[in-house]
Length: 257
Ligand code: 13P
Image (cartoon, rainbow, N blue to C red):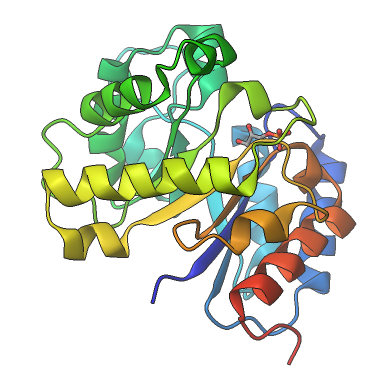
């Protein structure tokens, strides 16, 4: 049985005090959770204070990116070993990094391998643009991104894959449940063909893009979707906790017992 995973991607938001406050509110609002993984992914500078706030709670700490090499002349970057001292998971290949910073599938691949090597769990993001979807190229694009990101990876076990259609991110135009399920099934089948069906069955697949407490159940009721990567709605503790509660309910996980 795959766990439910809800991860908050705080992107380039918050300040020291507001990051601490948000983490504290999420911590306080989380009841006993069983079979549910909750992760917070603040900006690098907010990782140490958030770590302090969530100490002793089940909340998992994550980062939003990493560099693929340790101890090199790479001004401004954070290497895998130094990051692994702080976080358990790391978002890799987010469409904002691909679009704003020109990250290629090859760079994403280096980062995935470096994260695994350093003992972190990558949350690999893939997704098509609106133009690619309208051209009917969705599955071609996703297969290319998967192939590129997972080249020379021995096993996908431990890797989380987030399907984030670019057109749904920050637009209030979420995909529909069936659209997301179709892609999640495609991803699982792709992994099954590249490795084996058993390991495909164990990979956690998330949906991301305009997730709210109102639409979470639509995704969580899909058999191949194991949770969500949440952007905007993770910046408000009430909506983030609401998303976790809705997902837990839809997946039949105990909540608040
Ligand atoms: P929104 O939830 O704000 O659409 O962002 C999704 C996302 O990019 C999460 O990584």
